[in-house]
Image (cartoon, rainbow, N blue to C red):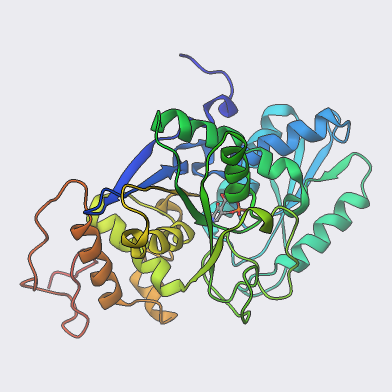
Length: 361
Ligand SMILES: Cc1ncc(COP(=O)(O)O)c(C=O)c1O
């Protein structure tokens, strides 16, 4: 096949088996980083734009406006370039710097809200709404309350069922930001007769599943205190809501990279942590799916940077080591564990079980 549009490359992403229990339960990762822009969100970006066109809300030469922490903006930038729209992304500095740089490279106009590196979801949304209201021909895609967000993941569900070729998805366990990817996938699975159990995962500090709000570093996911929970979070489809700390999420992303060679992002690390640590509690023989929203390459300056992690008290080598052991024990293709203890470490007070940056003297 020879393709003529980047959006024709959306979907048909691979399933990767990360783990398997003694009772035959499998943890399969839907690797959404294989989409253009390296993220799942381009599915919903295309869906929201096509829907707006169909409803006459976007006309040739018009402007798309969205509040984004990065991946939605990347998706909209591609769709806008392809279909002849201008695109304005309202962003904050909590977003991953590489995502913002890439958005600009793709032709997006970036408008920053807030002057520190804190998440400013609510202020971003207010400004995006205002910008679109003040310019004729501009359209605020409003991902948190746009039904076309979740609808954009119907194909993801269809791909899962096609790839499994028989077995049902017994458990879908994934990150909840707007809710589009988890609930859009779950809705389609249930429409197609699946009895899937739906488990949402949000950072500790996020408020969609109750509890105290507070700051968190997992990017592109959760609902920070002060932000409103949009209609894309469909509680009627939710069986259970879980919280994962930044330390657990990031330690998982790092351990998965070092153990298997697969780079996953920080929020995917949270979902994988939730799935992995309760895999043995699911009914024997279950098929458990986690959507990997994006890849780890976008987080080399944060999650995969020891200095950035240490400065925020997020580096927890014993937790990483524990996850490495769990991944080794549940590996579907057993490999010998790396030797422990290592003969040399860069910093003897922080021995690393694997990986890391050393300086040769
Ligand atoms: C980094 C990241 N985390 C989490 C999510 C889940 O977000 P949502 O609930 O908005 O689909 C996404 C979406 O693809 C994402 O890109």
